[in-house]
Image (cartoon, rainbow, N blue to C red):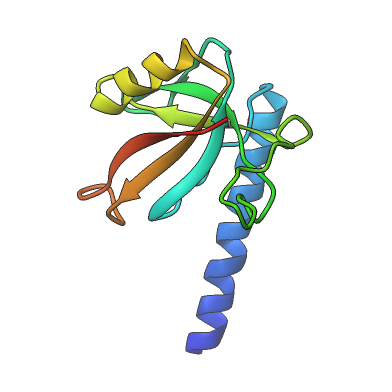
Length: 136
C-alpha cells in the first residue's frame, strides 16, 4: 500500500467516524461540540443550565451552551459582531474539577456574555484553558 493511499484511507475513515459521532449526538438531541484552537476562540455564553456528558471512563463534563460570531469576529474598531442570535449553537465541554469551571460559572450568572476562550498547549498533557470577558 502506498503512502498516499494510506493517508487517503485514514482521512476518509476519520471523516466517517466524525460524521457518525455527529449523527449520534443529533439523534440524542445534543449540540455539536465546540472546537477550540490554540490561541483565542470568541464565543457568547448563553444563560442555560449546563448538562452532563459522560465521555467514558467516568470523565464527566459540563456542557455549556455557546455560539460563535461570524468571521471576522471584530470590525475595524475592535467591536464584536452583534449578530449572535442567528448563529449555530455549540456545546462547550468543561471539566467540573478544573479551575476553569468556577470561572465559567461566575460568568454564567451574568450571561449572555461574550468570552474569549484562551487555549495554550496542543495535546492532553499540556493543554490549559482560561477565559477573558469581552465587551458585549
